[in-house]
Length: 498
Image 1 (cartoon, rainbow, N blue to C red):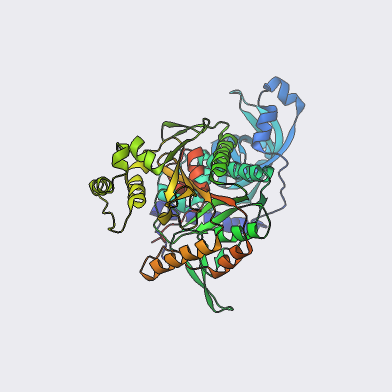
Image 2 (tube, rainbow, N blue to C red):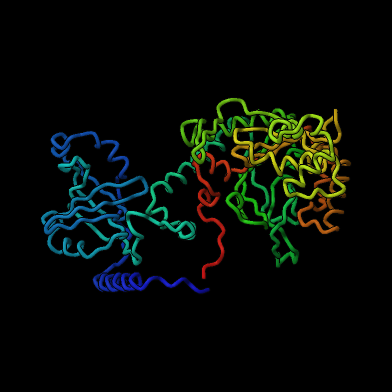
């Protein structure tokens, strides 16, 4: 694999740093691992940041810190350096008298990006900055590559995704964003457990992919001599567990879909699926609303957010509209027009979509919803009453068998969750798998396979159950106000370099 050629000045800088490392190797251990920092920057600032120097310096607080040197000002016999650890930054005051002639001479040859260990006492500079008056300083790791321009960080967006390690070193906002993601996901996990759900792990390698309409990644297991598929959803395994008698289960899972990449799609992504016996789609909507509200509060301190400069409020009850009602509310149709197949076909054509000849009224309504309405749903809105044709795993409504007890949640014009009263009629599920399998035979790569073991599980009897999947990457985009899914995935999928 070819690597991009660095600019000539960077090659020269790397060569200089390699020479410095070679000299250090000759003197002894180049990469020591016996330094244990006792303190962190943020804790020191929190504990001593408010004290003035008259109070602080006489206390002679001794500290040991370690981190990356981000800035340095050398001034003859004394220098200032900024050290960055996982929690933040603290200033070092390094003097020839403080650490000795030899160590000070060595320090002046070190580079930005080097990782240092420092011991000393705390004081405040004339400008009031908390600093460490260094009595001992060691080079722990030599950095061979120069950091990007300290004022702009990494401005090339693709480079940020490709070299996330450098993005995290140079951009405090990126570090905060991923810390917020971690906090939000931990809080969701705790919220589920507090509500009586058991966390489980199900296979990522499936003998047949199921649980969603999507194109899978295929791999091969040598010992079993069979093709396997990376999971597109954990759904069918989680429902087997409901059959087995666990009444509330959830999985925060990585799923994989061999489809396009966009600001909303990455081939591997994180979602949470959860199932509760004796819940229907209304219970699921109430609960999903609470999950999102809780995650936003935990990550940001509030459920009143801003996304792309526009307010998004998760605090009030989320709106609930049927597919048909959404056409009246957001596509400018009258109730009569929303029930007129010819009008819907014409409107789809106007939107640049050609409706297949076999589509019946519910599919035409859903098609127009996807083409015209979806992107307009800025505030949280549950869309309900999906046609049975596009919901192969959802329970049909008892009052109208053409629609299912299914919902999708839309915020900022994007789908965030999909849930439904589960189909627990084994014979109905078998028939629906059969029609999906026929579609697959006819060339639909996203249609589902027939899963005989799942049908066998349902034949043992699954209680009435509600299940839902929430796209956690998209939720993280919302709570961190990030325009692209790549901003909230540490290592997004990218084309090979060169």
